[in-house]
Image (tube, rainbow, N blue to C red):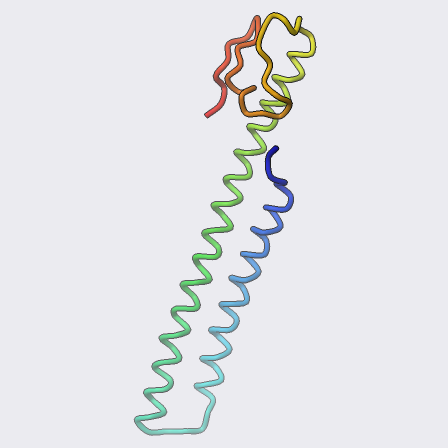
Length: 124
């Protein structure tokens, strides 16, 4: 059986939320550091280091976004293939079960099963 795409979609949403949180944290820590009434070489060094760390946080946020987008593209393909499997199973209910070798219900083997009157091989 295949994974629950709704659960995976929620995970993609969580990745997007984490990206927002990371960007917010980066902005907040830079703003707080810039607002400190402290001057001198040590203060400048601290501010530079915090800006550098904020850049890393923003890169991490971008990676979270990219992961969410990749997961969502994958889920679209999974849903498409699940629909093809369901269509093949539906077509097979109208056939004599002895006229072909049926894979188990929901199995990806339905994507390559040649049903009488239809060519197989719609899958990956």
